[in-house]
Image 1 (cartoon, rainbow, N blue to C red):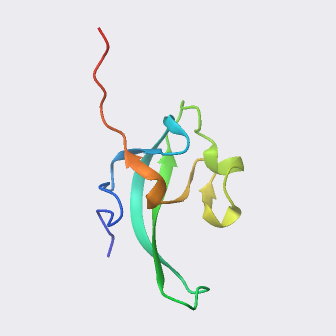
Image 2 (tube, helix red, strand yellow):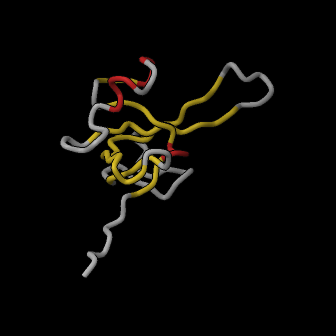
Length: 97
């Protein structure tokens, strides 16, 4: 079953999101949220959550997944997986007068 809302952040599938390290110039749409378990950590069951993000064409980081992430998290040059710990909903900002 597809997960619709993040347990880590208040983001939902379909939201425009930005990456906390790259700022509001990094814009993608959240397509899916999935639980990922780290089985290499034998001390505890480390729970992580990943978001499938499609970068928006015409933005500064539209090819983010081409060069800036490992191949294991890349689906295409403009789509891939990002930990939901780094993602925030892009809110509509008021225009300056």
